[in-house]
Amino acid sequence: MKFSKIPAATITRLSIYSRCLETLAQEGVKIIASDKLAQKCGINPAQIRKDLAYFGEFGIRGVGYFVKELLFEIKRILGLNKAWKMALVGIGNLGSALLAHQNFVRQGYEFAAVFDVDPAKVGRRLPSGQVIHHLDEMDQVLQGSDIEMGVIATPASQAQAVAQRLIAAGVKAILNFAPTQLQVPEGIAVENVDFTVKLDNLAYHLTMAEG
Amino acid sequence: MKFSKIPAATITRLSIYSRCLETLAQEGVKIIASDKLAQKCGINPAQIRKDLAYFGEFGIRGVGYFVKELLFEIKRILGLNKAWKMALVGIGNLGSALLAHQNFVRQGYEFAAVFDVDPAKVGRRLPSGQVIHHLDEMDQVLQGSDIEMGVIATPASQAQAVAQRLIAAGVKAILNFAPTQLQVPEGIAVENVDFTVKLDNLAYHLTMAEG
DNA sequence: TGGTGTGAACAACTTCACAGCG
DNA sequence: CGCTGTGAAGTTGTTCACACCA
Image: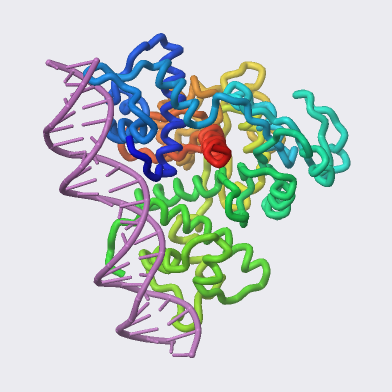
């Protein structure tokens, strides 16, 4: 297909397809049609075909898609055929939970450096092996490392300052768990993970439903 | 304004406005214009005015919006003028972090009941006061309670089964932290909080940027 | 035959631009 | 005068419908 701008939503869906395909591969499914996959993902089949068509022709007419092959292609498109190293800032409840979360590792994401400001924490070695650095050491720790992503798990009040430090240290992409809108320069990618916004959405729906 | 369908994105933004306004109120700001608020939120000013216009006329022409008044109105619209009780399923790393997270309480969300299947956990009392129930007790625990939301913090493999139990027990809205697309009947609201999808987005952006 | 790939129709959301009011 | 509220224009994303090919 000729080159065109790719919707952000398409990338999010590719990630979802990838997960569905992984499950299917585990179940031993070899081939799947867009209708079936659509059902699994809760997405329109034409949408799936269009999303894939942005990047090439991966299917066989009259048949469907080879599960393993499609999975491989999607991972390649998303850039998951390499390991991504991340810096984690904020080793509170959430930060610790993220470190313990095994889904990251499985997908090729790794917390290669961790930071906090609490003197009681700095210097300690985590069960996962990393030593907690002080925030002020960030530049030198990230220097020469191939850490390209930062994860912010601090209180909202500190998130903006931490973002600036990460960016100054050369990080180009930030996953932000703090409930704030970060202000970042052009070219820096930010994704927010925002429980409270999601809860507010649910509250609104319930309120509407109840009248 | 006449009645019309309200974009889902509008509700998400209302939640963001609400947070910005809270900060502004704390800083002692009394009045704010859509341009200023837009700057704070990283959103187009016309978008803000349009979002608000779905629900009424809250501003003063030539002046702006009264911060406290607008905050109150937005919270009323979202349904945050009441306390919401939630059931939490899955007391692993993530579940524990959520329980310890104080942002929920501040916003009027409360974990009124918690569940797990691990015999080592069931029966224990948490620091936050709740006793961990077995998943099988859900019906009777939720019976007669005013718990309307469920939060799933289990492994992906169990999420669908847990969702069905929550729905059977009368829950109408689900916040899903497990990396799966839940299949739910019409009328049940689901919001997904999905780190790995967000990370995949960042990976894609970095991959594109690097070429 | 059956399911992909895709132009064209459609729907939704966002931004503009300005009338109108405080 | 300045900023809101809003119709109209513009943009973006989704779904349809079918030609086309394995």
